[in-house]
Length: 248
Length: 219
Image 1 (cartoon, one colour):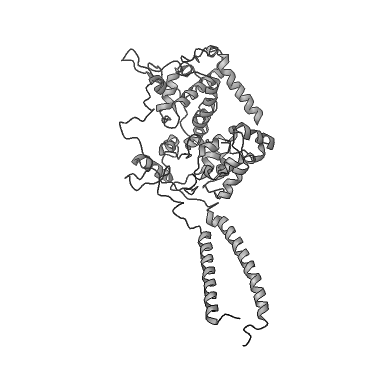
Image 2: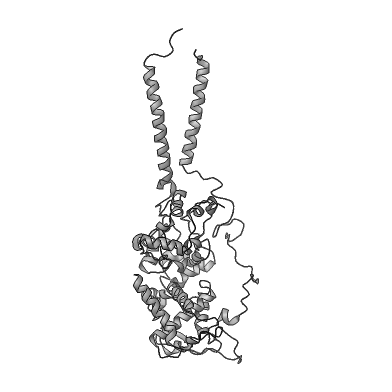
């Protein structure tokens, strides 16, 4: 009819044990105990490595090696320069009103875009310009960006004859390698995006000086004949401005 | 044979049965709330860094775009941490002598990376990719909160699966036009529901079944 006391005690003990185990499990769960699944022994981006002496899991290319697809054979596209027939040609410099040393002649810089200049390229350029360039060069290229207002030495404006006449390769070279107080941006901005930014700088220059017959032509795309028409490249910028204004 | 239990044992039996159920319920509820608490998830916990870097100053006051420093956010899984050279783009000139920027200068001088402390640490059984979220119109602030107002960055959200899945179930409630992805001033109701439904179609966001399938995030 009834269990004897010993069996009863054994059952009670078992229940207590199970309860304690469940409670313990819940408690460790609640304490957020991390298991191996959460921190796996593999490298994610920027993780620390105990194997390499500099402790970086993300490695640089070994010196003297070229990764697949990064031979960058097209010199004009990847440097904005060509070999000048005159090997002694040197870039001349002068000093501007702000005391900056500026380039006055551009013997090696290419004068035509090495890729088709399209509305998409200029739009992309506008977007990239506003990320990487606007902080110093200002929204319209006057050299009055927020960082300059905080005390960074003022860069020259794009809207003077020297830079209006400067070849596109010069802008590309300065973005890639920097100039004066400006650090190189080559590691931050991809080559195609640098050309897009150059196209947008040209658009900014045209917007202030619509009569100028700036060379917006592209050697790679003969279809963009309208690009020589100075009114045409300025038009996309005007369109973008309208859409932006309408969206807000 | 004598009775084992007295009459009052009936009451004790009833009360203990009820209280076991009640206690289990209360215990379970406490557990779920504990697991969600900021104490355990690290939500809202400000993580101190080796340099007193303020997103509020750089993003909020100076208006620098997220991508100026987090360059790879549109193209790779990781948003990208800026190299010390990115800091030096400005700080070679600005606050170039400030003592609290010494770790930056030391890093640049000695070519040693700054060891930032991770704020958002997803478990490694989660496959997460920033670029796809950017490409489908998920704004930075949707997950990271008002970073432009954070002097010290903290986790705005728990990063728990229930948080991820609410957007994977109904992305049309959270997405925004791609042009607004990096806009920190954007508010969720700046775009109406009909437009967002259309965005879901335009951006070819996959079905709820696909987005909530296990292997979408665990692979």
